[in-house]
Length: 73
View 1 (cartoon, rainbow, N blue to C red):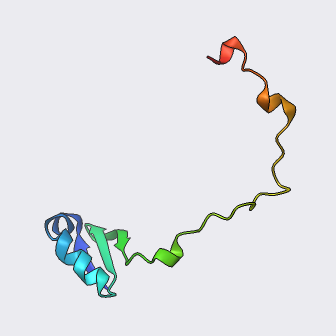
View 2 (cartoon, rainbow, N blue to C red):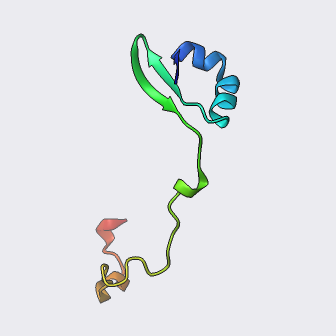
């Protein structure tokens, strides 16, 4: 795992992205303290929306369809 300062990360972002794309992790530091980590993006990690996922957990009452009071505008 490579460690780079914020300043160096700003200067060499393209090269760091290439390293991450090859599977390496990069830790970005402020001074000696780690503050961020650059890792490869995996599309499988993005949650997929599923129709009906909240079925039975959410209720919409008739008041939802009533006009808002003037104080809400």
